[in-house]
View (tube, rainbow, N blue to C red):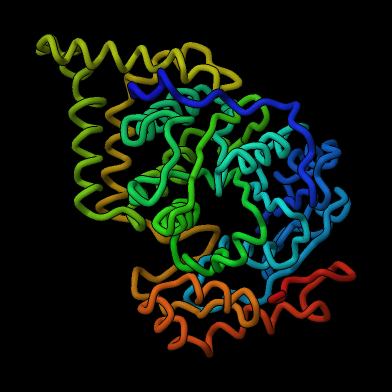
Length: 401
């Protein structure tokens, strides 16, 4: 947490538009009711060259119609193959369909403001290879404002504040990313294999960031609260169930680090205040409890609404630590009505053509051998993305360049 004294400033609007344009891809499955504010924000930004909404082939809501009405180009993915999780499958199709020099991804429940993408592009020009932004959280209910900040604090205790030093190969195993808002150089990401690097990870954003950092990419996580907000959940119960599912990052974190993270959370964050309330605290407990309440001061800027529940959120740190412990011991691999197998899922090879050739050239020998052994599964990604089969747009459907 001491890194907060020297962290980079938050993202600000006002940067010049990047040459080559910005393509924004929004993966969406059953998001018809939530995607409207995201599309409106993108439509109001003159620096967005194209908006692509990638809709799942078995979407059960009129997401595609809402996206088209909002001015987006719609790409419909083919059926999900074995070895893939839905979001990276959608993002890979979006990456191959995009044409801008800067490739950005947003979640459907985000609310971007003009200036966001030029700010992200400026960071790419400043030496970052992947820029990811923390958002401002919209928590409408008191229950959300009580539990959500406690869960957010677990990230600070484990990884430090947004804007700290860039992650690189020396700390790739601790790199952090926020899949709600990311930006890359499109050609560079294509050359690295795109989202085919980590197709079967539930915590796909962090898995990709760590995979790229291990190859020397500079991962930059910045505070974007002034330029993007998100309405993640509708209730305290959803915060517990949905965010608690992914915050442990158990599918991308070695077990020894999982154990150390939980130890830090319980000893430094959750238990000191319990001991203070129980009148069994020593001086260290009092100090740690004071630090925890002091953390609310910088965290307050990332919440649109706070109220008394926000300021009392340290009282439920035990609940947050318990939820992360539960999801570490009993991980959930169900998301949006799909259940994915635990580990050992067959991986598909990277797309054919120039993307695959560049990716394999960068990979080491074991990775190249693994890609070769799974060549038959890979062809589904590019072959099934022919414009005549899966696009609502007239051209530019995902296919290997």
